[in-house]
Structure formats: C-alpha cells, structure tokens
Image (cartoon, rainbow, N blue to C red):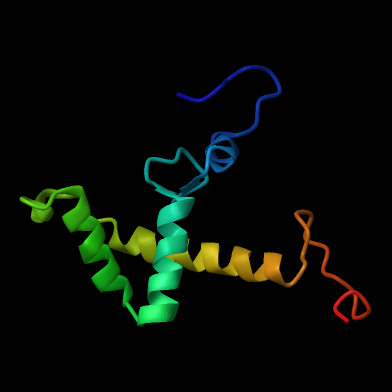
Length: 108
C-alpha cells in the first residue's frame, strides 16, 4: 500500500525512499532491494558472475526446493541493474539529483 495523501510522492518515489528499486515507474509490481542490486554489481565486477548465474542464485535463495516455480524476472533484473549501474556512475561522477553535471574545475 502506498500513501495516497494530498501531496504525497508517486508510488515509485515512495519505494525508492524505502530502499526498493521498482522495475517500472507506472504501477510497480516487481521491485529489487538496493542490497540485491549492489550485490549483483559487485559479484559481476569482482567475480565475473553473469546476470544469468546471479539470477539463478536468487531463484535458489528464494526457493531452493522448487526454483522452477519462482516467477521469471531475469529481464527485469537486467534492465534494473543497468539503470542502477548508471545511477551509481552518475553519483560517483558528481552529478546531482537535478541532473547538473560538475564543471571541469569541480573534477580537479
């Protein structure tokens, strides 16, 4: 349930404030925790884990006995992880939340 009070932020913004990254901005039904997205990035960078192998690990963690019954969210994971990686890179480069890039003097 989302807060629907007057002046409350959109549902996807409420999810982001709660540490959850929605797979879509319109009526989100699939979300990933920031922790899962960070873990995927570091598994990929440090261990060379592919998206499919990481997703297989998530399915096993969700239901080790019946991983084939877990809904297929592989494409959503790939799309969201690309957005997450881009947001991380922008943050590390100093782009603020309004989208203003730092000047060349700011980077020195």
